[in-house]
Image 1 (tube, rainbow, N blue to C red):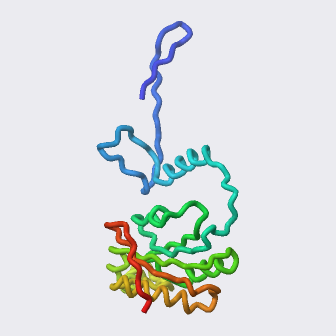
Image 2 (image 1 turned 90 degrees about the horizontal axis):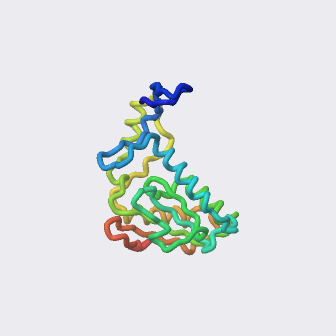
Image 3 (image 1 turned 30 degrees about the vertical axis):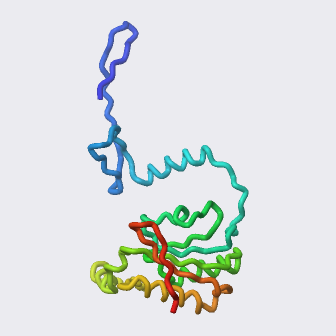
Length: 203
C-alpha cells in the first residue's frame, strides 16, 4: 500500500506501508455478497458485539434465582431459540443445554444446584425433530478411540425414537435421589419446521 507524505520542501515522496493481518482456521469466510471485507475470527465478531451490548447495558437488578422457578433442559441445536419459543424473558428460567438435551449426570448436577440452592421447582425437557444424535451410534466412541488412542468415558446417548428418548429423560429426572421436586416434570418435542411443541406422554 502506498501513501504520499508532504516533506518540508513541499514535495511529495511516496511511503510504502505493509499491512499484515493475522487470522486462524476459525476465520469467517468472506462471501461474494460481502460489501466490506472483514478480517478476524467468529470470536472477534462476538467480542465486538458484546462491546456494543455492554455500552447500552443497564443492570436489571436481578439475583440468580429464576423468576418462574423453572429449569429448561434442551438440545444445543442452533435452531432452538428457547426464550422466543417459550415466551421467556431475561431472568425467568435456568437453561441447561447439551447435545440432544439428554439428562446426563452433569444435567442432574445442574438441576440439583438449580433446585436446592436457587429455588426452581419445575423441569421442562425439550428434544426436537431432526436431531443430530439420531444419525449417530455408540460406534462414534470407538472411532475416537481408534483416532486418538483413548476411549471417551462419556456415552454418545444417541437415539432413534425421539419420543422414547424424551420419556427416558423424564424418568431419569423423576427417579434422581438428588432432586427435591419431581412432581412437575414435563417433556416435549420441538418441531424445527413449524416452531411448535408437542408434549410427550410419560407412560
